[in-house]
Length: 369
Image (tube, rainbow, N blue to C red; front, side, top):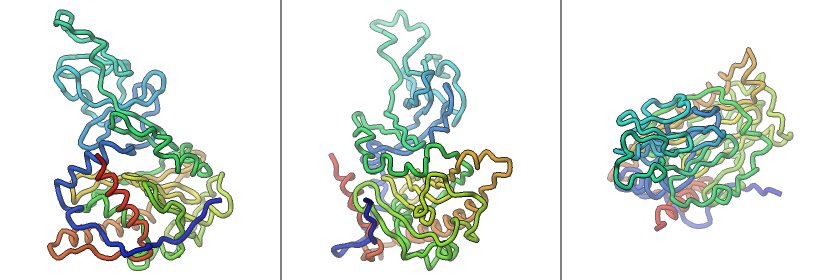
C-alpha cells in the first residue's frame, strides 16, 4: 500500500548558493553532467506518428533527429553528416520519405541510420559505407513520452525509472491526446522553476484561483527522495478550472479517491507531470542560459473527448495559463534576487522538504565522475 506523508525536513536545510543559478560555468557543467547523461524528456510518441516522420530536438546544445523508421521504431540520430559534419535537417519537423540526404554533398542515409550512398567515394582508400552510419542516441518510450539519453552507456530506462513504471496506469497517459500547448520563455534558472512546482507554501499568496479549488496545505507525498519527487493535493471541486466545474467526465480508469485529487511529480531533470481527474498536464523544461528557460506546457485528454466536434479545453488551459504566469513572475523575481551580491542561502521551511531533496539529487549527479 502506498504511503503518503507531508513534506518535511529532519535537519536545518538551506537553499543553494547563488552561483548555482547565475554561473555560466556551472550551467555548462549541468549540460554535461546532467543533460548529456540523464534520460531527457523530448516530447510525445505521437509527435512522430508514422514511418519517415521526424522532429528536431535539442539536448545539451546538440541537435538530434527524432524519427520513426520503417519498422515503426523510434530512433534518434545526431543531426551531423559523417562526411564533413554538415547539418542534415534544417526544418524543425517534416517527413523524410525513404532516406536522409545531406544538403552539402548528398551523402544519403537510410532511416535505420546506415549509409546508403556516398557520391564518388568508391575510389577513396579504405572507404567502406558500413563504417559510416549516423551516430545515434538511446531512445525510450514511457506512458506516451519520449526520452533520449546521450550517454554512451546509459542506465537502462526501466531500471532508472523503476519507481514510475506502471505507477500512473489508471490515467492511461500513453493513450491520451494533446489538446493544447503553450510555450513560455521564462527569465529564470530551470532549477527555480522545478522548486516552485514542488511546493505550495507560496500558493495562498499568488494563486487565489488554485487555493479556491485545492487546499494549499493538503499536499502529501509518496516519493520523497531521489530523482522522482511528489504526491497529491486534494481537489474540492470537479476539476482544476477557474470555476471548479467542467463538462468533461473523469478519466475512465480512476477510482473515487483519485477523482478528488491532483498528483504532481517532478521527474529529474526536465519533466513536471500533473495528473488531474479529467486531464493530464506536463511541463517540459529546456534550459537556455543560467537565467533563461523555455517551458513547453501541454494538456492531454482522453481521445474520445479530444476528437469530439465540441471539444473545448479552454477551461483547463485558462486556469493553468493564469497559474503558470503567476509562477513565472515569482520565479523571475527569485532569479533577480539570487543574482544579487546580498543573497545568501536561506532556510527551507518544513513544507519545502521536496526542494531540499531535489537539491541533494542535483548535487549528487553534479558530483559524479
